[in-house]
Amino acid sequence: MKKSLVLLSGILLIAVLSFAQTKGDSVVPPKDTDINKPARTVRTDTARKVIPVRKATDSIRRTTITDTARKKQVFIRDSTPKPVIAADTSHLKKDTIPVVPIKASADQLARISRFQDALRSHPYFNFYGRAIRITEQERKREDKDALFYFIAGLLLYYALIKVVFRKYVDNIMTLFFRVTMRQQQIRDQMLQTPLASLFLNILYLVSGGMYLVFVGRYYGVRITDNNWLLLAYASGLLLVVYLGKFILLKLAGWIFNITAATDTYIFIVFLVNKIIGILLLPVLVMMAFPYPAFFPVVLTLSYIM
Figure: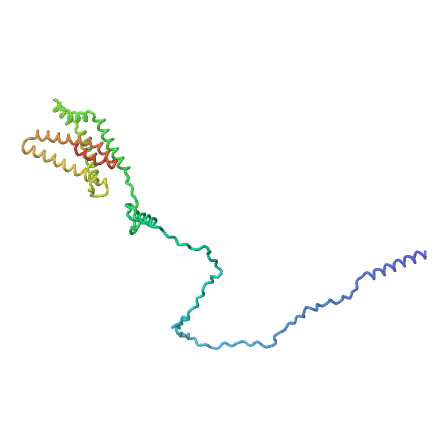
């Protein structure tokens, strides 16, 4: 029993001693100071701050007058001549091939002279003359589309008259180209269709006016540059001429009491006009789109007609 107590007390004593050795030292070692870092010192300004006192200033604005005249600076050029530095040509290589002058023979000089004379007297190229300045001019192409449609419409107009008033057109051709015993009968039949006569008279005015336009353009007679306005003038001229002729003949027949004779003459005149209006259609086609050398021939044939 005593042995166990002694052993227990010995174990407790050893445990207490070991606990005392493992516990850290309570004294905190001083920290190492950095020798390289200088100690920071805070200086305080012990001097008393003096509050500045504002001086009383005059409330009137002061204007300062400055001299606006700028001082002109006069630059005098340096009259000393600059030295001219000659280029160093010592490093350049000289041509070792000797220059041999070429002497032309008399035959060669004669050939050159003949060649120059040929160039000087060239009919198309002025090699030795003064240069001529030629300004470019824009080429304006004449648009004939409207003229094509107009001629096509004129032919279609006559075709419609021939289809609708076929008998009237046949009577005109018969009465104009063939002498028959039934002239009075055919004339009476034609007078019964005044509408066809009016349409053919309109055809004569339009085709005759276009013919006058082509003739005037060929001879350089132009009242205006607008061909359609010129066509209206030419057709109006024909209308005035034949309307005045019709009125004068009617007055003459009434005054001299020869109405039958004047009516026959008026019928013949307007019959010829209708035939001319029909025959001018192929002439207008050839005049509207002509070959330049063929136009005078067409014009001469139209005069004969």
